[in-house]
Length: 264
Image (cartoon, rainbow, N blue to C red; front, side, top):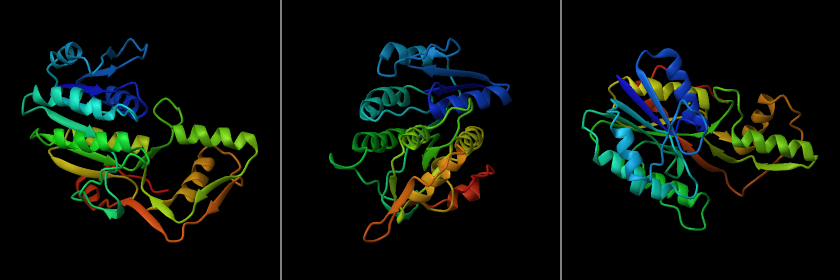
């Protein structure tokens, strides 16, 4: 079989690409937009000729692992749409989305909450919601909704939150994080393993993938500091008037996948 990872130079995509290349006997292809990695195909998914180039490979499985906080809607409406419209119904298509709902223990059937222009990451989240709508046109699809991704990738590189926290720790200032605002988180290696498992099974539909236990932003940042072996005393708690939850239910994931997702 041929497997194509779109976005194989990114934080998650790189981890998927290298893990699956190491353990699979299938033909594995990866794309990048600007990377100088000569193993990867330099592809701009907003360019029709580039899309034709990757589709000429006739992949059996496609994993879409791209994110762009500013251009996510364009990526969905142009690149993703063109691929979905031009692949066979037998091609397995795995789309890495994000948390699109609001509230506690969000199940996969939750109605996506479109963000207003003044809400956090509104362009990115609304682009992912549109991407989900496009992917559902394809019969053999999987939509993966991960928690916030953290940890060291396959090459030992930190996620952006860890990098930011490390820089703050060097300044000597206190860093305030909310202790009663809860979200779901997932280690990048666990998520990559789950997506690889999904690539080779028969499930279709939407699936949440994260740790089972909701974690406050304060505890999460304390945990990141421990991963980097730095003193976490500069991280201090603040509190909202009422507790806020923005976390995922993992009941479906626990029924369908063998991959273990570590809790914080």
